Image 1: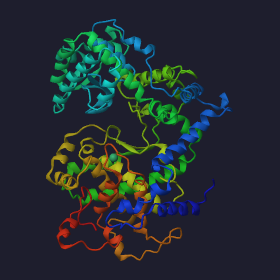
Image 2 (image 1 turned 60 degrees about the vertical axis):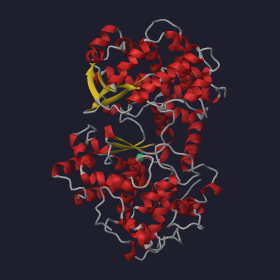
Image 3 (image 1 turned 135 degrees about the vertical axis):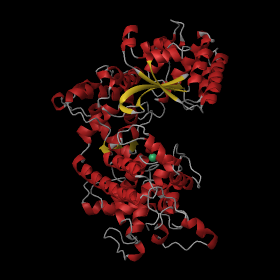
Image 4 (image 1 turned 90 degrees about the horizontal axis):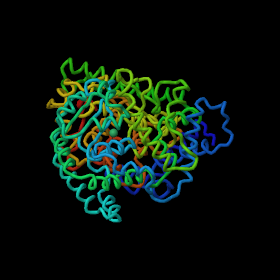
Length: 615
Ligand SMILES: [Zn+2]
């Protein structure tokens, strides 16, 4: 469908109007006002699902096309592998995962539990007794290290685990292993001290666990090569790991193996539930999917890059003004810290490395050989490929990250659609799937783009300066200066203010508040008072004035039927709390003055970086 410039704005305005519920006052519940009719007229759950379906459709067309010629493909091996994976996936039987030959790794061969747990980790299964993950050093963001701690809670459902075990004769053993490790896990939650060690130190400090067997197996190394490697470890929950070692040493393998078997089944089933092959592949094979989408489907890189850089520059400009006003009364060293972090921040469209050569892409998945028919075998291979790629950085080039080849490749089961900020890279990444209408279109009028996308980028930018993000400097290294800022009274006061309304995650709350303020100030100006201006409606919008349209367009990101969201507040809370903390909002919608006893509250806008004297 060809949409010219006028049409896209009319279409966007039309969407906004369709979602309105005018029986509700914008002053009392803005989310319900802006989004109240969405679920009545829309065939989608929300706008995320809408752009995800568009993406899926285009990728399916690519995978199903018969006329792909080899000479057109710059990375034929990669593309061939992706097509095979897709083909086997869409023809996969719709039954739950059943054990395959992979289970043979759990037939007794050695006496150390470490060997089995390392084997499972190679297939992506983490948090069996302990948590192992490749990360970067806390004080050197280009040095890959191995993070070790107790297994994280809530990575699987104990109910499902016991249900599966009820078929087996080993129910009691499984329950036993589950309970004893969970008790230990709960006890350890508080311990946050972290130690940075070499392999010898790790072996010496925690002799209760056979690390040599574990890492030899996980990294496919001979004993001597492992000893010669310069692996670094960041270990936390030290006492608990020791206790874990003792606990497992006291258990026989007959007790541990049935538990491991069921954990493995649960793990593989997680990738099979509600299987949408394109979405599944986005999560598991991000480089291949991004390469294909970027090269063969994505059309607007030049226009989008220009537009996104414009928004990013304008948000940074406003944030610079916030810093200059110095609401938090930082000293000059702290101000430099914050400024250089802002200046060094990068924006990336798509989760792809800078590396451009076709050879790199073509060879990236050389270790796998997917078949057109066996989905489960492909899945097992893909999981082991991902773990291998994550660990590869530890063993090459004096174990430095090759930043030109860096992209995000973590153990997710669901792919990211929303933009995100990476502390260690000081980079804001916008997944290409997000750059689609109705969330965004480069031809849209600035009032639409700078409200919705402006808020999203403002939210992500703000993550760099909330209580966790502030700890990382411009290069992504943890810094004592960050601590110093975070401990200051004024910073803590801002946290308290934001915490006064109940929240699911305080840092998300802060990113929301600051993000919307930042977007609004960037569009209308920091000292702007919308009461002083006569706004005439735009030609594509006859009812709402610019400031009103701004909030309504921002809210579109959150329109949908309200499912429980993890990590964030519910969408209605996010919208309502955010607009309540914008001083201009009540004026923009001519909200009646609050009663006397509410007046105090009304004046108490939560702002962290925004100068309080600003309108
Ligand atoms: Zn966030």
